[in-house]
Image (cartoon, rainbow, N blue to C red; front, side, top):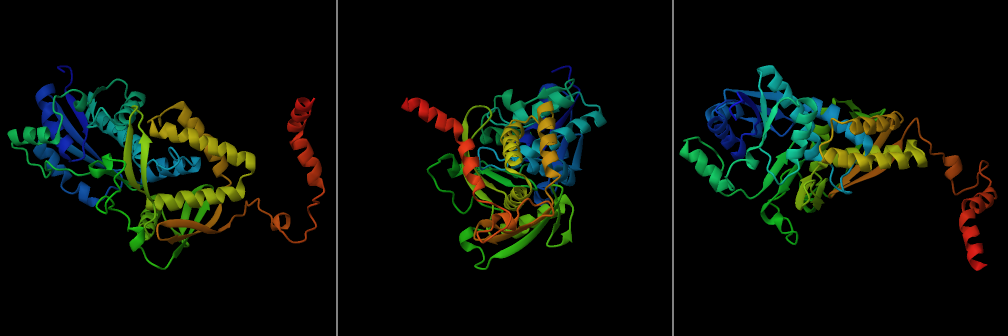
Length: 401
């Protein structure tokens, strides 16, 4: 502890990190620099953050706008892989961690810090995600995780700790839910959700309209892609972040993007969470629909394998690895063909692709028609089937003998 002189803390302004600042100063006898990342969580969470950090004992507070970088360099590449963790989770929290941790390292270098600190608990995935990034980008810096060191175990402990030091906080002893928000999604854990038999109440959801209360009239939205990148919505050119904001607004109004899952955490336990990813749900569905137009069977199968592997790479915090780079490169090669337009119908919690077109489309009405055609001789199918099933025929004949 005596060797640490300046620490950069990943700071959110919540109860945990508010207590961490004075705890670090007392136990490490060092300067603490607060760092907060704007990844699109909203102005309410960032308002007054600088003042709060200084009041808690930080010498500086750096609030870095990462919204465009987050969407352009982390979300969009992930979409090209088709990654969905355990079939449902769209990786909202996971995707934000590498860009945040990377920026934290950059602030540490800028201010001459010799240590990094995060407020992740010893039960969660985020400790691995942050520290894996630190290991890849700043192996020389000391990493401090107070939840694995101090003897405080509850919100009451943290509130008492701050009260003893006359440090103001807006937190209370009762915190029903643990939430994490960014431009891609918002997650909800805790409260009644800790009982998997308990249906989520209306108080859980904060981003999307209840599908039962959504408009009775469907809305259609046109997404245009160029080489795997969303470029226009309803003909309007938008930056990656602007496009996601618009999709979130439109889709949330129709109750799109809610999931309620039990997932396998990296540390071994299962956890139950509710996630809202309205714009991401529409974007991923549109992207995959366009893929089906432009990739042949073998290419699509391999891209699906990339997506399955990448979902674990992202979830497990292995962004800054050779495996990550290789998977992204493979997905990017397929994405070059993903150009075209997709129309998605939004209605009562559902996002349904209704129209699709692409200059790279492999779909041919001449071949696919159920009517008469001049390009496909159905007699050819007999020989194909005989050869395709030849191994089964040989095995069956052997068994009969």
